[in-house]
Every structure is written in C-alpha cells, then in structure tokens.
Amino acid sequence: MDDRPIGMFDSGVGGLTVARAVIDLLPGEDLLYLGDTARGPFGPRDLAEVREFALEIVDWLVGQGVKMVVVACNTAAAAALAEAQATFSVPILGVVEPGLRAGLRATTRRHVGMIGTAATVESGAYEAALERMRSDVVLESVACPRFVEFVESGETTGAAVAGVAAEYLAPLRSSGVDTLILGCTHYPLLARVISDAVGRDVTLISSADETAFEVADIMSMTGTRRTPTTTTAGSHRFVCTGDTESFQRLGERFLGPEVAGVEHLEWSGRRGPGVSFR
Ligand code: DGL
Image 1 (tube, rainbow, N blue to C red):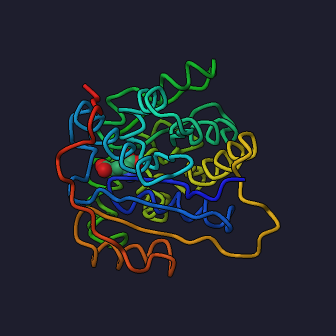
Image 2: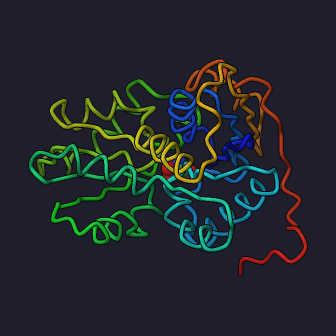
C-alpha cells in the first residue's frame, strides 16, 4: 500500500477524460493533475519540443512525490513515453497502447481508424504500437488539428465544430472503418459530433477506461494500491500553468465538481540541479 498520489498530465483539459475514469475506478486514490495550458496545445508543436515539455512535467510530478505518472496526452506519450520510462523510477503509463488495445478488441472487420493531433499522427506511434502487438488490423490515421482548440474554448457542439468534423472525417467515413480510436484525450469531449460525422455504426474508442484499468493493474502488481477497504474518498488536486479560472470552469463541466480550487503553476524555466534531458 502506498498513500502517495497518482500523477497525471495533459496539455490542458483533455486528460480530464482519463482523470474521470481513474477517479471512478479508484475512488480511494489521491490524484495530482497538471494541465500545461500555458504551453498547450502540444499538437501543432514539434515532437522534440513536446518531448522536452513532457520530461519537464514528469520531473515536476515526481518531485511532488507521486507514486506513478499517467501521461494522459497522446501527443506527449508519442513524443516522450519511452524516454520518461527509462529516466524515472516510478511507473509511467501512456494512453496510446491502452487505446489501441481497446480498439483492436472492438473491431469486427479489422479496419480501424485513429484520429489525433498532427504531431501524434506524424509520430507514427500508433502504427509502431500496432507492429509491436503483431496485429494484422488495417489502421488508418487522420489528423484533426482544430479539435483541441474547440475543446479548450468550451465549444463542443454547434455548426462550426460539426462542419470541421465532417470535413476531417469524410475520408474515414468513405473508407469504411468499423471502429474509430479517439487518439487524443480531448476528443471524447466531442464524441457526439464525431459520431454524427463518421456514422453511428462506427464504434468510438476512448483510451480513458482502458488506461484506468491499467493504472489499477500496475498498482496491484507493485503493491501500491491504497487499501481497497478504505471508505475515505481520495483527494484530487488540479494544477494548471495558464488561466486557472477557465481551467476550473471547463474542468467542472467536463470532469465534475472534483475540479475545485485549481492552483496556478508558473514554470521557472530552470530545472533542478543535475537534471538534463538533452
Ligand atoms: N490531449 C492531448 C492529446 O491526447 C493533447 C492535444 C494537444 O495539446 O494538442 O494528444
């Protein structure tokens, strides 16, 4: 048993979709969530820059005393998961493999779509994970760069976002995928719009639930799960690097009342002594 919090991060509010699943599955666990809203979105950035950001954030979370880190951002996981796992001693889990695994379980015709940020699609992280899993599923990846902006501004419905979705998803609609992996943790917040655009017969897959189950498995394996008999609810701390008010407003809407008292974190631009990720 380990009473330290689970650390989690994203460029903004998208990772809250994963946080919701973790809170629901593991209500006794403490959670520390960082939204790097001052530097998000990560999707349009260079992967090397996202890698720097991701390692810096993991370093911060580890410094805060978390017992594990969930990279609740596909872009950051694509850019830095392996390196973060090799650099830090706490278990570090991404969202790419859990999402892909759930997609492979769901597909009926072995034809799967994946939508994500430009950086995630360009990284080829899903294709590489598919190869590691030795799967013969056909995977078609499409970047949906404007989706994150819509979510971060709270515009999750309406003609503008529906129009953009129809445009982005037209190729997947016509190619006949039966399953669509939401390869960005912001996208479950646009699930209805996406489903309407791609067709209701296509099964949408969010990595959130699968990731939460993997968090539980890792804690069981490492003996770090809080005593399951506890009736005390875990505490949840939310920190963001940008405007706390808008993070709290969106957080309460997307995750729920647990997002209260959002704290501000200012990056100093300097890492601790001896820490170098170059
Ligand atoms: N939610 C993130 C992801 O899963 C980040 C999106 C972004 O910052 O562009 O990729």
